[in-house]
Length: 55
Image (cartoon, rainbow, N blue to C red):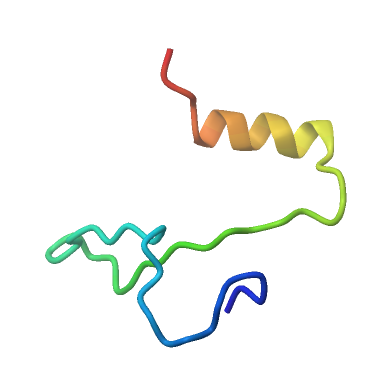
């Protein structure tokens, strides 16, 4: 639940669902995360390696 958005029971249009049937992934979802602590340079490097940005 995102307390900054109306909680009226409607579908959140920012969540994009992908058909993962047959992929071996049991479930998936999306969220709007907010960091409360600065990431360490080591963690930034690890995330960049795991999720490269298209050029």
